[in-house]
Length: 152
Image (cartoon, rainbow, N blue to C red; front, side):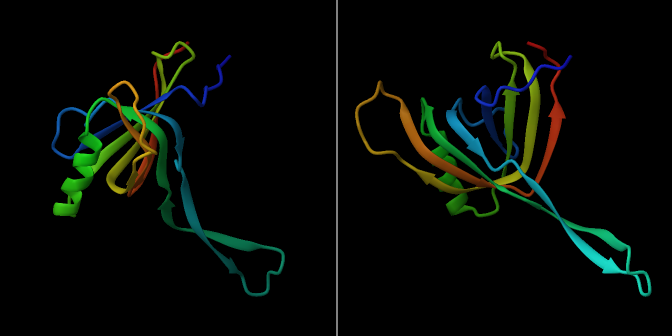
């Protein structure tokens, strides 16, 4: 019997193209925008009023929105600034769904050729020296899912 995924047990890894390691160890409390759509064309066959033909068109992808994050450094802000200086820079984003134990990997959403669209600081207040990120949005060019190997 397969155990259900737990939606709040996830991590996010952003690795710039050409880098060996992810930018930083950021944690976010919300992740939205893992989606694919298919533009389907409907064609009617002449003389056959009871059937319509569906043709698959181009795929479309969402916009990843990460909210209420914390990190120990400024790497995400610096990456955003690097893309401003060189608009061709891209990264691979991975959203990892963990099992109930928080360790075993259940699934991994892989987002290719990510570009930062928005980064927003929260209202400022003192908080243990961590860098807070209220919201970060990423555009991506493709999305695929890889099943994980862990139980939990």
